[in-house]
Image 1 (cartoon, each protein chain N blue to C red):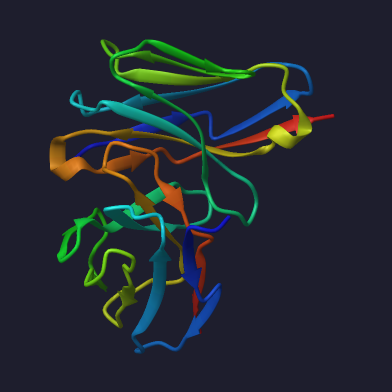
Image 2: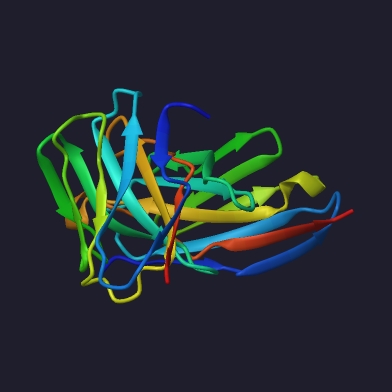
Length: 113
Length: 112
């Protein structure tokens, strides 16, 4: 079935450094790739998303890149701050299997002050 | 954080009992979803519904049931057939299936 792999599972960076989280997907028909941030005990919230007709999207300190040929996409956070500490999930939505959104296993990001 | 609500926040169940988790949204979204989240794992899809009176099984539907009689409501029943039901359950909704999903605050179910 469809699968989304996410790496690393844990990431620790120093405040001000950049963080990169990578995901690969298996369904070549996937066309929508959201990223969610989940703080401890709270609900996941969308931070950025990208559709298959673009290769990169940026929103302030957050950017996402998509390589459809290689079937991978990445989240880039620059100038990290302690409040960026959370679990980040990537996801891919495709047509196979009825328009399901498949989530990665998550990356726990620690930003050290 | 209004728009999509879940109740209760915490739920305790004895083995062999069925329990129903509530999910309501006032966002006028057509699509609704139920996910299960276990510690250290991602979100796994239990059921989803693209329109009223229609729903589809996700990846881990066994032991669960849903209904979608109203656009605003998508309750999930955890039956006694679900062998390991202790988890955090998240409901979500979206305008369509190719758009941002808005999540509810979640229900933490514990089987005693």
